[in-house]
Image 1 (cartoon, rainbow, N blue to C red):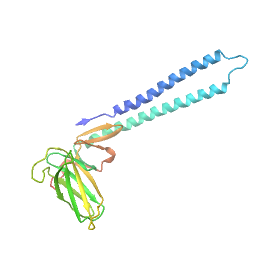
Image 2: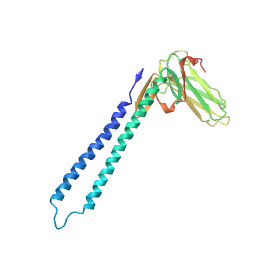
Image 3: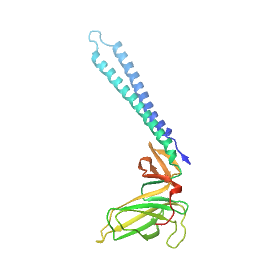
Image 4: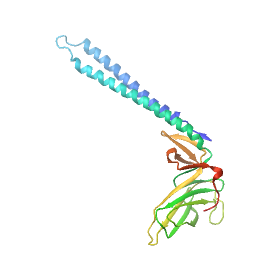
Length: 228
């Protein structure tokens, strides 16, 4: 089981807030140095306008408050991400359904579902390998509905294909020869969790699925292995 902690993303966020805070502190020190020099060397007969540097001090204070607010928000986001990541451990070993046309071939099975927006006259299902080469073709169901399709990992000659990621391509046409819109979802066992650019994801045989994209999750023992 591969687990990548959200603390890496949190460290990056915190470092940004820390850099902003340090930059602000350096600028404020420089401002005070210049202000002290100006006050020391000012013309007693024409003193400086106090309103000007008072406004500058107020501006620095507002920026400092903004930086502190951002740091607190980053800490809160980091905490939420870590809690979400910890909860995602429960998905490990479960069969996940998510939008997409790529699915892993594992244990002699790769599974998808496809939904036709309208009744079709003909539907062609193609399985493509990682190089985009067709390794299996068959006709599919044509009803306006969602159809499950499980591939047994063999090409049209009955030769077993190597495990890895495969793509389901669905071409559907109606009685007038016009294309019918199709959406596909993939299935696969979650075998890892990770965080990329602040987004928590499941690793499903090499497919990275954001937790927010999960449609269903169920015990692997409840799945079937018949070819659709």
